Structure formats: structure tokens, C-alpha cells
Image 1 (cartoon, rainbow, N blue to C red):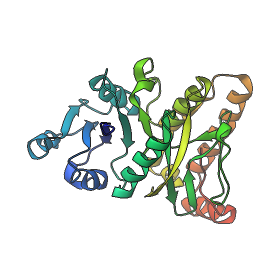
Image 2 (cartoon, rainbow, N blue to C red):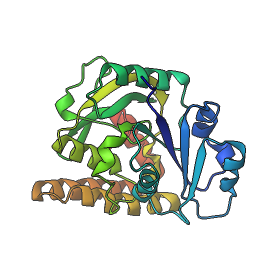
Image 3 (tube, rainbow, N blue to C red):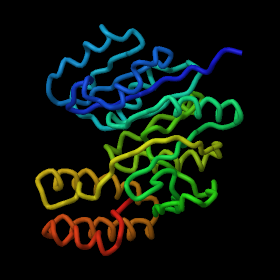
Length: 271
């Protein structure tokens, strides 16, 4: 039996490929094909990567077009091919154990369509998580997940290419809720999801929504994407508006107030 073909799709933004922790981790593995989608808004000559690594396909998106358009461009390159697509941000360190665990899980679950690795942040297990309607919740690390409620973040999610025979990411989103919307649709289509153990770490912080210029830009992206995700029903729209309002209050509060709020709650806000 031929080994399953693995393709890593890495989306990079205003960063040289030489600075990407993800690419540094993956590129030494010549058996992993890589599609680098470059959303950068300034010239960084990232296309040079193909001169150094023959397993890399470089796609310039000619500016920051968002995650779904970048993913879809990569999927169009893979149209008709069999294998597994692994999605990555540009800042995730990926050890060999990730690919080993993925292939072992794939071999033992030939019926599975989507593979969610365990990803940790400074608070513990951050993915997979539960998605109930439009609400998310962390899963206690010691708990066996209820697969009827399961979801997971984009980065390090692995998906069989057969899933994309009749699906492309919703380009109405830009950055947030792309993973939520994808998993919600896959659950509706009765796709099989499995979880596998991997030692991955993601540095996520609610500080993205501090009262800074960057925080205000980040908020404008978030509220459009999140409200789109919540637009499927009136109760979800009401919930979405409440979450957006809370984030708006955070954004316009002094940073020390937000830090104190998070310390008292003992966790970062998550959506």
C-alpha cells in the first residue's frame, strides 16, 4: 500500500519564510509537500523558497486576502489528488511526532475525514474544544471528548482531500470563525472527526483586543466575521451582538482594567 500523501498548507503574512517557525519545522521533511500561501502586503521575496526546496509550491495572494481565499487557492492546486491536507499558521512549531501520530491515526481510522490534534496554550488544552451552536468551551484535558460537540482550531487540523471534492471555504469570512464555520458544516454533512495526541503549542492572547491601533484593527476583523458566523438564527445573532459588545468594551477600556478582569476570571476570553 502506498503511503498517504501529506501536504502542509502554510499561510504567511508580512514575514519572511526564513522567520516562520512552522516552515523551519516542516521543510527538513522532504517527504511532506508544502504549499506556501503568501498574504503579505509588502515585498519580501518569499518566492525564493522554491529555489531552495523543491517540495514547495509558492502562491502569492497579491496582498492580504484572508484565510479562506488562501486556503481555496491551495485546494485548487490539489484538485483531484488523494491524500491529507494539514493546515498551519506560520508560527507553530511542528515536531515529527505530529506527522507520526497523524499517520498512525489515519491508518487506524480509514473512515475518518478530519483529524484534530491536541493543541495547548498557557492555560492548558485549547483545541479541540466544544462548539455548541455558536458558543465555544474548553474541554478538560482529563475528559474524553463528546464527539457530537467537537470542533478545533485551523492550525494543525488535517483533512482528507476527498472532503473538498464538493466544498470550498466560505470567502465571506476573513480570519475569525473560519474553523468554526468549517466544522459546523462538516458536522452537518456527517463527516467523521477523530482526535489524536500531538505536542503542539499555540500562543493565543486576548491582548489582541487591547485599546491599541492594532487592537482596533483586529476588532474590526473580528466583529464582521463573528457576526456572520452568528447570522443563522435570531438567538445566535443576539448572542453574537452581546459578545461583540463585550469585546468593544474591552477595546475601549484601559489596558490595566482588561488585565485585571482577565486575572480575576483566571483565563483569556475565547470565541
